[in-house]
Amino acid sequence: MSDEIKAVEKAACIIAWPAGHSRSPLIHNYWAKKYNLNVEYRREAVPPEQLAQFVSQLRDRGYVGANVTVPHKEKVMTLSQPDERARAVGAANCLWYDAEYVLRSTNTDVAGFLGNLDAVTPGWDRGLESAVVLGAGGGARAVVFGLLQRDVGRVYVVNRTLERAQALNKKFGSRVIAAGWDETTGLLGGAGLLVNTTSLGMVGQPPLSINLRCQASLVVADLVYAPLVTPLLAMAKEKGLRTADGLGMLLHQAVLGFERWFGVKPEVTAELRALVEADLLAGAPKPVVPPLLVKPPQKPKNQPKKPRRNN
Image (cartoon, rainbow, N blue to C red; front, side):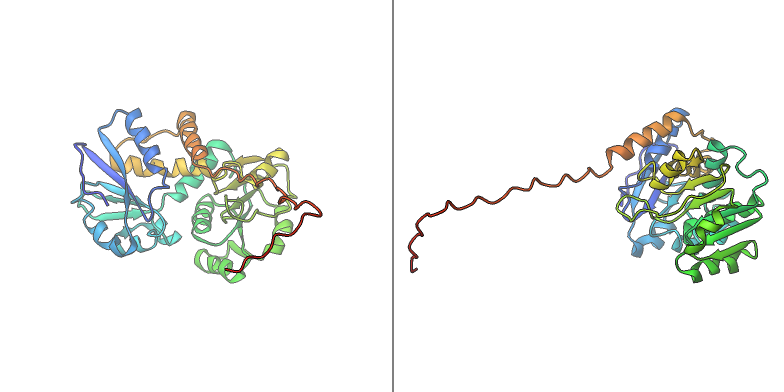
């Protein structure tokens, strides 16, 4: 962890373990430069056993707030005052101080998910009666909470372990309906939105196997952003469906934190997206080229055997 405090008016950071993979500094420092603000956003690699101490000293370290990511998003709720969104999702990813210097927390994944859909698939929620959400983890909880806020009639949560999907029904109420993986195809026939919140299709993970039999009006969203175009999104694009990718959600979820900390509501632009896309592609694992199969040299036929040596 870094104790160095530079001569800036305000600073925020990403708290993670490890922290080197985060694109948040790239996003927030781009905005700081764009809006000519004397602020800075840093990385802080904080192991779990040091989280409580670090968060308690956040102001002393010169920070007005922070983002929080894996593996600290649930624990940090006990170290702050979470709002309704954070409590509903069961995780917080954004910290800030209120006027009385009380440390508050929220979950900006909800705003990021909704903001991205609004930007790239406008009108997606108009008269939306049925949505299908794949997965039942933290990402799914944020998505379900957002969909209920937009008055979606029914949200089907599909998960291989049905009990985890049923837990979201208990948490959010009767508009959330648990379903098994084998029910996906049937549900898609009447759905207006499909959201993948699982890691399937991510680099290094198994592909998402799904029969995309649906209406032409279906909107398909994927929270995965590595690769930028997942197999699910590629399949949807081939069918001419509207899509929303995980990178868009990453960019839009950063807006709320920047505004809270630095007083300016930033804009998600094509230039910013291109910057982060280039960084993601630069850090993507290179394809593995299999070595050429070279046959071992063959011994010439009828070659006299060498006498054995006794050592």
